[in-house]
Image 1 (spheres, rainbow, N blue to C red):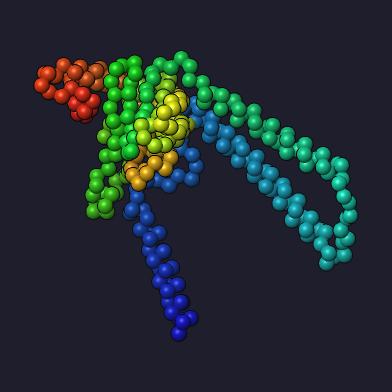
Image 2: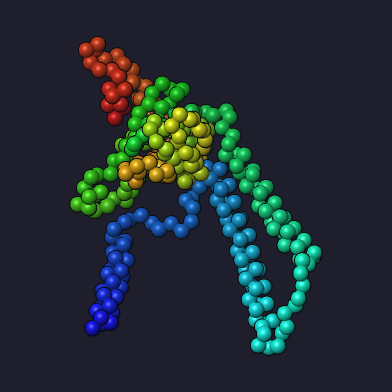
Length: 288
């Protein structure tokens, strides 16, 4: 009886699993990604090429090591009368298995170091934006233009609670995205106002921890107009999964128009009558 009951439960579990897998496309419209996102910056492209390069080196090592191991096990097995070789502290073997890994690491270190140095070169930016992580939203301050705003999750509550179908960009949509011009070198100064966060946009190759009391910096130069999405990559509390990063890359002309509109809104909020609030909350409302 117990065995029959277990078998029934097993069949039910398998049926439920297959049903869930069959319903997966209806749950989310996002395409399955088996590799890194398509790079749209030079740094992201270098990271992608480095990832591919080291992956194939690891594959060659894997095939070589396990090929030799299985060949040795088969050709020198005891059942065909092969006698194990007796040696201890063979100098040649010691040298070979020390020198070869060293050369492999050296071969991988050069392109990796080159990419890391390029990632850290934040000199001569065209635009500087201060990024501040909060529980649970992002603050963007355009230091050269004198305006700033908050960026919060815009996914409808009905989708989150399961009362409506999930959208294409479920949990990856915001009310006010960061906006930058295409082709401009953008330096981001990243910090946090409460706990650890991490600003991450995979297509840009940028992932930097946001630490309270510290300012870290990174940079990117988007090569293509479009909207690019990421997330907070540091566990920052119960709403961590509701803290997306969205960057909208505009043409130079469209960005100039957008920046002019933001400056006008801030000026209008600052020039409000004395009896009306003109602080950050009012400015934030004006920028919406």
